[in-house]
Length: 276
Image (cartoon, rainbow, N blue to C red; front, top):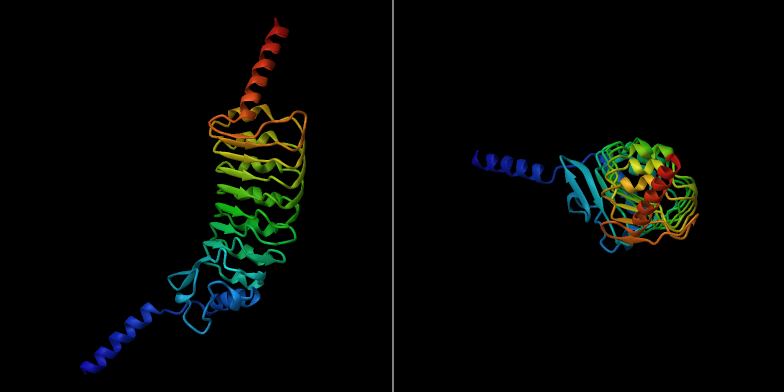
């Protein structure tokens, strides 16, 4: 009887420690492994072993909640099955050799807080389906080959704090709906093919600390309303087609903002003189 109790106790401990994750989630991980040349990763997986021991995978309550395979020599395309990791909160596949487009099944990852696919060779457009990820706080897609326009659907991600889309081949204009991203702290659209005027709606992003818009085709003037961005400490708008060139400097009050403030004061003084 004591032997039986000991066996049952050990079985219980074993089950709790090596609990099985949802089979569909495990298959999604294996699909990722196979589609990105998993055998040649810097830190590979023993796909015959338990998922709990797989490098870069975090499990909570028998569900995959985080994948961090940054700088791990992933090469290939993201599989459609990645959309089956519905409990995923964070995914970082930066600094790899991913190609192809971002699967539209990513819309299923509604628990996602951070999506980082930067420094890869991803092509195609930004899926409008990303707009379904309402909990998203960080979206890093910079340094890829992504083309097309910035989807207006991204402007519904009102929890975003970092939107980094720089060094791609994006075209079109900045959606004026960007004013809804009131929690945004970092916005980088530099080194793309964006055009049109820089929308004054960006001035409504009062938590903004970094604004990187250099190396595009923007025209017109830098909106005077930007002087009201009290938390802004870095602004880069050089190498565009603006009516005047602005020096890009980081600091408590960047040069571009000081220039705007001076311009604003001059215009106010002129207006007062006309009124008199």
